Image (cartoon, rainbow, N blue to C red; front, side, top):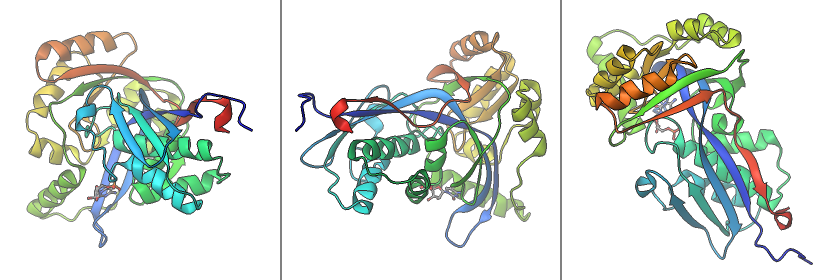
Amino acid sequence: MNRNPKTPAVTVRVPAKVNVQLAVGPARPDGFHDLANVFLAVGLYDEITVTPADELRLTCDGPGSAEVPLDGGNLAARAATALAERTGRAPAVHIHIDKNIPVAGGMAGGSADGAGALLACDALWDTGLSRARLLQLCAELGSDVPFSLIGGAALGTGRGEQVRPLPVGDSFHWVFALAEGGLSTPAVYREFDRLAAAAGRPVPAPVASEALLRALRDGDAAALAAAVSNDLQPAALSLYPALADTLAAGTKGGALAALVSGSGPTTAFLTDAATAPAVAAALQDSGTCRAVRVASSPAAGATVTKASASAR
Ligand code: C5P
């Protein structure tokens, strides 16, 4: 008998990410690109709460929630459906997303919601699936979803879905500049292919930078600043030229490094702990972005933060 009158509920907190290295290889026959993708989870979070319902239902609030699709294509809905299928039950849950990660911003907000919904449903239904099986399901959902589950720092290879955790010696401090509107990830990869073809040079196989991995391991912000790179940046700038002004404003404001976050259009600025507020103020005052956020890394991956007694 359920002695707890409260509806069972599970809440999971999931971080955003920045790619400190995004090395992109040539397009593969399946349309994806092989990557050497160094992910770093940052302390900006979405919260996903699941409760039993008659049928799958999705709601969302928070900044930018109006742009979040609430249909079956949403990664959170797809995650619940996939886990229900694999474990022989109906995806009868209400998923609520409390959105703080920029939408379509290159910070894996959609992937975070997929990993969060998967972990929350796993706890609600007490599926007993191993971590390895959950990671495999994440990889089927999207290239960035496994990293959202594990968090911290990791090297993603293949299309980014094969993740190996990396050691990080100390906290890094970031300012993120949010842009008006979003960029479509497939469109940015297509632009990468177009620019590569136009340059007439073969695209080399992606390789992780030893200097960058060392900088992470040593917790050395100056060395990390010298090593960050994003092969998608020229493509993102080609589709969204005004991002160059934001990058310049952050650099002028004292950032150690400035780069487009993933496929953009969010831009990321590595700072010292002491200078983050000044860099944030400079970006805000520059009028080249919609909003700024300050966050540090690494951050823990998807974590159950609340589970009512009757949920287990
Ligand atoms: O895996 P995910 O669904 O997040 O990928 C979205 C799109 O981004 C893909 O359909 C593809 O166009 C592009 N992509 C890519 N190579 C990768 C990851 C994503 O071309 N490694």
